[in-house]
Length: 373
Image 1 (cartoon, rainbow, N blue to C red):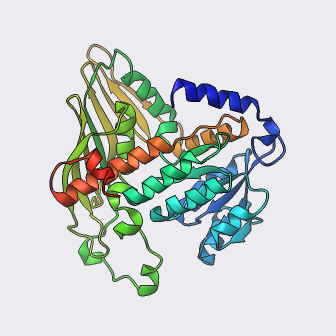
Image 2 (spheres, rainbow, N blue to C red; image 1 turned 90 degrees about the horizontal axis):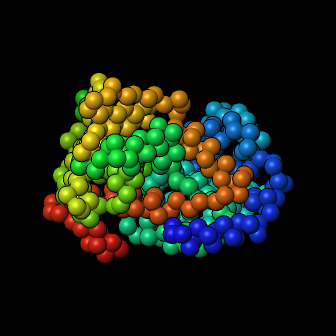
């Protein structure tokens, strides 16, 4: 957003009364509808329900047992209206904002409908499972009213510890970024000796193991790490080269390990190392090597090492999803909307760039990626 857009948005906001900032009476709770009550949907809903600025009034899922789980795990939403069609939820009166926590490939469709319905939107990451979907979501965001707040589930961007680390990186004490690394080495794939066949009725409800639905692990999972690389470097990469595959996973068509090198230009590279094979330990963090110091970021801390000073380690005070949700509600209630679509789309496209580079086995540019859809 440039200075002219900021000034225009500010002028527009001055014309909107506090009572019109969201559909309910001024200073009352933001009414929230949840589209998708699976694991992540219930997780986010729990935090929304504990914030006095929000009131969960509607739940939507294709499967009634998922809605029942939401009501069991988050008792405060017991009185919420229930829907099996997201269009009915969006058309229901008295809903100010929506939480979109559906399978990745449905994000563009549901986001587009929420924009058309004039809702504030908190959409879980990533922006889509393929380039066409991301472009669809970006086009929808351009049609959103300037009074609507749009945010995505890239929680690191709202963590006080990540924000403190970013401030250091922007300072002379850090120097110029020389190298970046993102690690997402976790478990999730059982050894073949413990894997069981997937029942047909269960497979119909699964989406993660299939690339068309999830975007593959580099998109659904590793987009968090590449988002931080883009954020701290201040740009998206120009090209990528990588390799990966499926060594242990016996169903679906997604990878279980990968390695990608992103070229950000001006001699800056970002390395992404990821797997879902870790059985006893894991590593999820980002490392930034500067000409004057080094910073490591993590969801539970950040640490900073600089020659001549005592190493600094600051622990996170809480789960950073809470920071993201509190930011969302503050922006809606205080009538200071932001639109985070560009950064979310670029980080998703960065993951898709790495995926395409792995598929083709050659270096792929940003422009080549965008031409695929």
